[in-house]
Length: 45
Image 1 (cartoon, rainbow, N blue to C red):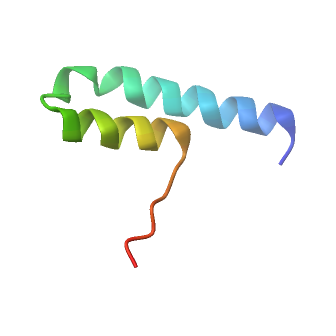
Image 2 (cartoon, rainbow, N blue to C red; image 1 turned 90 degrees about the vertical axis):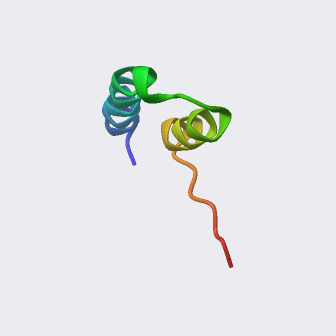
């Protein structure tokens, strides 16, 4: 992936994170938002 595409992707992640700040009522919600911001997908298997 090119750097400009990565920048666009990360900007979208940051915007989504900023829009969800009011909904982060506990640590679980915060950690979920941080994983999404970082682009991490945890394998439950």
